[in-house]
Length: 447
Image (cartoon, rainbow, N blue to C red; front, side, top):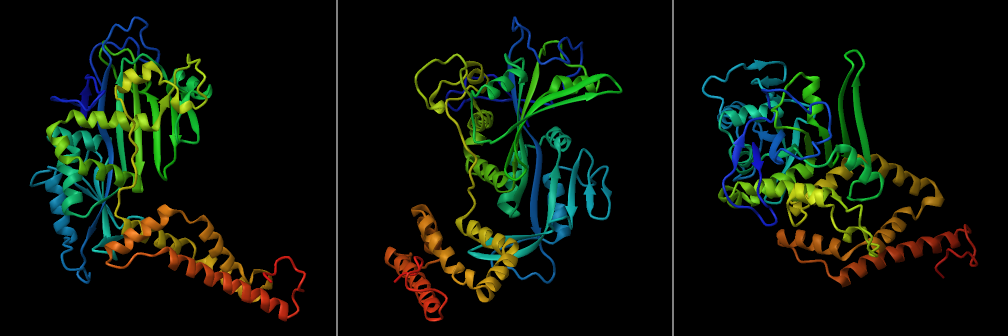
């Protein structure tokens, strides 16, 4: 859904929201197309649009031999497919349906993927972890726009029902903001980054430019932050894209920048769960979605005032660049943090260890058995781990135990476990001494 946002968002806004179709504006001539420099007189009104431009949901389905815990109700594939067709508002006879070996397409880049690369997923229900077969529901940008043209709301009519009734998880969500007739350019943002006037958790920024040699066209310019394992942020010039595709825009559009926030895996899940918790507020005030988008973008990028000459050495305390504040029009920053259940987080960590560390564990075991140099490797590793253990780690684990009805770990228990490994190490060193592998002057001996 595209949301035109013209209001002051220093606090969460109120009022109706004007729904718009995809911002590929046609008609009239494109006076500024091909250039990212806004008109110096700023003759046209600055506008922003907020919308979802990509959605990938993983949804479990039931096979005949599946054993599920009581209360965990999921559907067979055929029943799930029928439910999704209803949620997608495709009608009784879905148009343009195409079926290949493992993909069902409905046109407009909407599809259901069966037996894909990750066709099984692990789910948690009442503290029990189990593996299920899954399908992927994917809506690309055109799919999202087509769904909206069928009067569908991406969050209320698709994401929320899938999460609430179908135990969906998200693999990727693109949440975008378009800036039309803004007062700055991509080159200006790049300059601020290179000159050190950006506060962000991203580690790298990559400028991107593209040129069609055969057609002699400058196709695009942009900035790229992040990675596909977490969050990506792309800032690019839509007017250049329109020009390369021979799309004309309204004569009231001087510049058109897109800020595309791509959330992957747990961050995508966190974004959907964040909005799910805000469901009632979002229903009462749809402008809240535009406010949240700006707050999240502000949390990702905070461009600072290059004219600041104060004495504060902490860059995060410098004033934000005035044009950036005018664009976002919010007072606070938001971060998309993992909101999944604690048990699932712990399960995910252990699953990752089982998948990625099993081979290393065997190598470690063989080394401790056959190589005297690494005889104490495991106990040394545990002791170093105890040194790095944080109070928040203990609190997290105790919450995990509490939800399972188990007593918390006490400080005395931790010290007892730690001392057990210390004693094991001491006995091993004493054994080295008795076997003549070390003498009493060896600095590594504990006695």
